[in-house]
Image 1 (cartoon, rainbow, N blue to C red):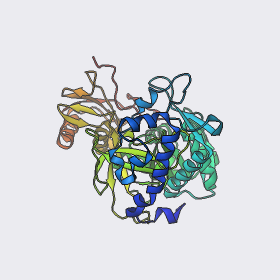
Image 2 (image 1 turned 90 degrees about the vertical axis):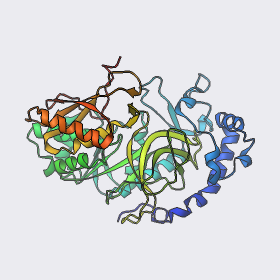
Image 3 (image 1 turned 135 degrees about the vertical axis):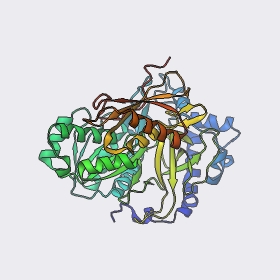
Image 4 (image 1 turned 90 degrees about the horizontal axis):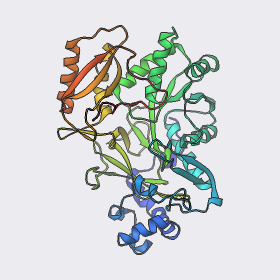
Amino acid sequence: MNMHAPQIETAPWSHQATQDDAAYRAQIAYLMQNSAFYRDLLQQAGFADAAAVGGLFDIAALPFTEKDDLRATRDDAHPIGTHMAADMSDVVRVYSTSGTTGTPSYIPLTQSDLENWVEISQRSYGASGMVAGERMVTTYNAGPFVAGVTLDAFARLGVCHIPVGAGNTERLMSAVQFLKPTVLGCTPSYALHLAEWAVARGIDTAASTVEKILVAGEPGGGEPALRARLEDAWGAKVTEAMGIGDISVSLWGECTEQDGMHFSGRGLVHFELIDPANGTPIVIEDGAEGELVYTHLSHRAAPLLRFRSRDRVRVSASPCACGRTSPRIRCIGRTDDMLIVRGVNLFPTAVREIVGGFGDMLSGVILIRPTKKGVKQAPPLPVLVELAEGVAPDDGLADKIRQRIRDKLVVTTDIQLVAWGTLPRTDYKSKLVDWSDAR
């Protein structure tokens, strides 16, 4: 079994918090001394100094950090925000977010920060079974975005990396044909789009040299129906990874047992699980569900403390055959993507997973179209479901989908079957909710 840091990855998880306590206390002291944002936040919460904050076992008493809190501190004098805790002369790289909701947020890294991120990514990709000498073709937009760290990680692992980037399917498939990579890295929705694109042109992706598909960037790679569809189309094993730009890329990586993504940030990042509704801690145990909250343990440029990720996950804490002892997760969805339909919380990915269970009759692509602005929606919730190529609309099939969603998610929907190719495909993250009809 390939393992990048076996001594760390196989250590008893029950000892992790105790081992991390000293690093956490040092990080708090660093924040108090160097970060105006956190010094003010902690003092306003009643913690006069680092000693008053205490150790890692007391972390639940501290306030959360929200992304909007950080954005609010940016100005001409503080382009990154007042949580910045290092001098720009010590920064070796600056990434940015996409800025889809406004001005991009900047994510600076010192040399030690960069090294830690590369280490985390090596553990994550090592779990997926990548070994030195393999060729990997990727669609990561690794220019301004934090995914660029993966280039450093692949080089350290000894992988021959073939970066194609998003938006050029023909170039990517040419690379698959001529350079014969064994690994493909992309979002799950793009892997599905590539397979459909290939079928339409008479290309047999299952006969390609691709043996592993590493998916990341959005939930879905762990959905049984979507995973089975991808593995059948490509004749390859699918594993997924997940990170968060403000904390670290590839922070979670799935091993070849395909039973959830292992935490790969041991010793460098601490994570908690909370109830997203009220912020109370949830014990990390088998079957637990909640929102992930992160704290840096050894970060210098712009460290974060109790940062709410908005990723809702389900935990697996039972032993894994791969030998890694850290908990595993599946991402259920984003809490900020959640809809509430007559008091029931609904994640768009949960609808897609149920639709995927109908097999070859459907393409697996859906689009929810709320009729009302805001999180709260009145039933029935309109859902467009795309048929498989050559399949005719069938009222009976729509009724079955509607009933299964009702049975499993306790939500009433209006299922509209549409012809194959009607709903948009993407070379990056899939869009599951369309607000254009909302009033």
